[in-house]
Image 1 (tube, rainbow, N blue to C red):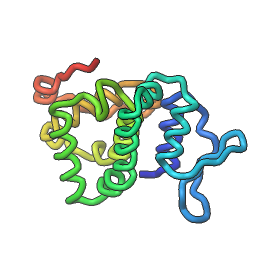
Image 2: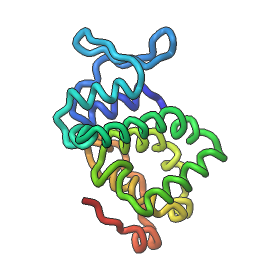
Image 3: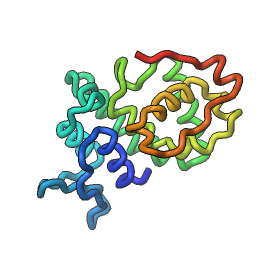
Length: 178
């Protein structure tokens, strides 16, 4: 995951200015906005959520429990999902695990989209993009979640919509979202 690009995309999704996002001399992601600098991916996302008035930010901080769950998923995205999506064997396990998880859930935390969903979405974007239509059919639940998120303009941000339309996908993974 290109952390700089991901933070910029998440800031745009939340409707806040990304500020100056870069890797410092120690290769730690930092964000400077209005002379205030914060470091670390999870800390930056937390700061963005505090600055935002978006639905996603409110959902992500609705309670202490939700905030803790969101934080854990953000850490998972940075430490496991992003690097794992570049490894052939780890990526297959990631896809299987997410597919199983989304067989009973519409979102990672609670019943609404949060920063956790954005962090995972952007961390596995290129992996999902590389899947063939048959591969996407093997991960119906993950495909449903991913397609649902990419349909939101603030998440897609003018990018191309990945194609999940096949007869099998369309007929079997028509999950509903609250």
